Length: 392
Image (tube, rainbow, N blue to C red; front, side, top):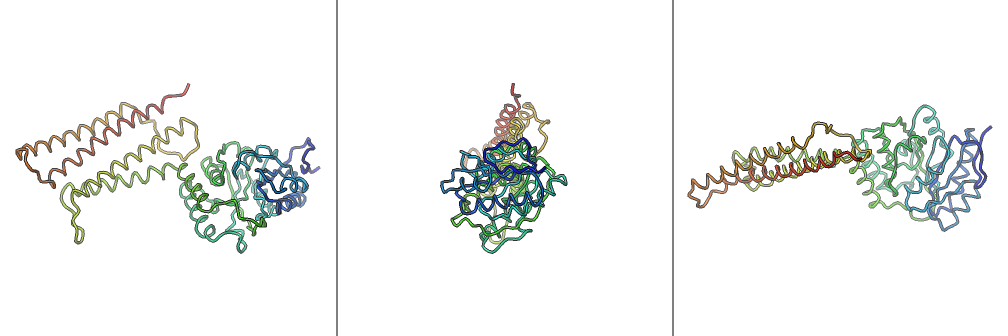
């Protein structure tokens, strides 16, 4: 016997197979339609299900409209798209949860591919609006041709997944997958957090076509193009220290060492200009900045492992000890001091008089860089040792 949990107060003994969670903030014009379509989908597919509207403070009658249409409304006090979804999912009972917006831009009559993917073994099912079709004026131009494609590409590059629409608002996941992801964000970046953590956890996943319709809200969207776009990008960077710190740092160190090695020998002519000791100073600065970024990458890995955070995996840290770090730091400092003494000796040979900057700076600049790098490695080593202290 099929079960439909459309009542708002009646407690039923049978657990639903599917939960549909709809976040809601002043969607009175469309929320009832969304609920009715979800109910009809359960009937058409002959599956047991419940419909939960996660209300985020509606003042326009959305709560009453959703209840009258047959949904169970749960109130979520914390504001934000992500907070509403989390609150609704936490109150749901289904083994498989499908989420979708309450503005009628997604048709809940079209949830069959999500359920089929779940039954085929997927724990996480993403919708793809670019495959399913986008109605005219359903998605702003910047979102369709810049924001979504660029952020989705960055997400695939950073986290090695196959999802081509990171921000599709219709997606499905199992209860176990939701618990494993340990989602925390409250705003629109919740959409990225879910895909990122599903990728980091290597959850069995699938992507299905979803049609995006022009919404029926009759008011401006809650989404802010630039602010929320930055929040998505920021989240992708923070959960990928390899791309935030390591790759840029490695590039800076490589370029700095390359130009330094060439400039230590002689001037580099470039068309009508000559690259000399001033460029040497900047190239040494690149080495320092790059090495600091690599150190931040290693520390972020140590901190994440210490705190049990799910971020992009990195290099093994088993090789590191405080003693090894201090030996390396001491080597840099000793080398820098040796270069400094050679510069001092050169000055002595000139009877401590005026010096040729092109000669002396080729000794002084790398000397100072090496000493600074040594102290940088030493402080990094002590901080790493602090991070590796096991919590009681």
